[in-house]
Image 1 (cartoon, helix red, strand yellow):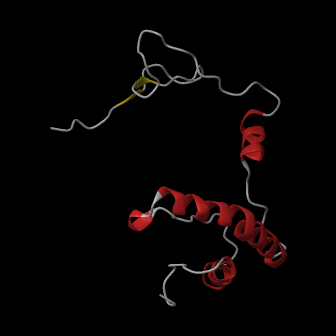
Image 2 (cartoon, rainbow, N blue to C red):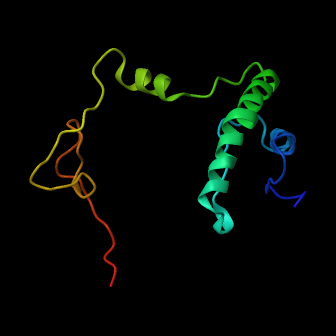
Length: 125
């Protein structure tokens, strides 16, 4: 386990292990934690998410920011990506389609999408 990205343990052990990833991958900007594997009860998974949010992620953000090389830009946020795409203009707004009954199939529910583009889902037999 020590030689894999698998991270198990106390919040401090998770922090310590995650900070070692920077040695191998450099200044990366995204980290995915999977907490629902192995059939954990939902209560346990929710406790793990709570620990990540309150004890692990804030420390990782501070540490990774302090270790980031000066030439590496800040990680994009949702807000910065919206501003980069739309500037001061109005963002995409979903349009209701009462004839379809959902916004998961057919054309995109966004007003600025090409109406000829449709989602195609595999047929399960």
